[in-house]
Length: 165
Image: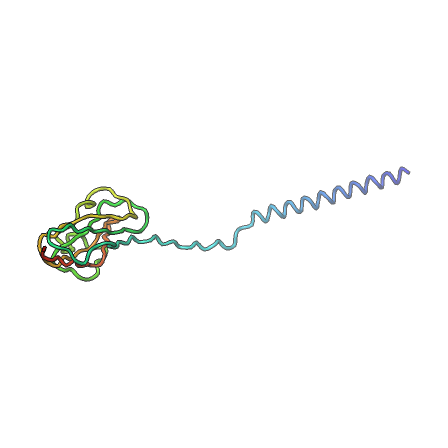
């Protein structure tokens, strides 16, 4: 009987040791898998910041001398603070594309709306201003905004100013 008891105790000890060995093996395997280096990092997706854009959204095709001309323009793009946006205008055409290096002084337009020409304004936003034509002529104009030191312009538009009735 003593022999059976000793064999049983030895058997239980062996089973416990085998179980502990298996448990240690599995824990070490899991720990090693957590330590293994990542062989391939995910490729970052490049994000391109949206460039500011400006658009004249409301202007008449014609107006009469002395009439109030309402102009509306919209500046799109990332949320920013700007210190200047205006409609620049004059009686001489300055056709073609204006890139970001063309300043208001280079534009050839002697006049501008003053409402937002100097201050602190948030974009994206919609802006409105009025001008009054003083004589019959073609009036050429572009909306403009300066964002981070770069100039953004609309295409040139024309308002025909007619003699009053």
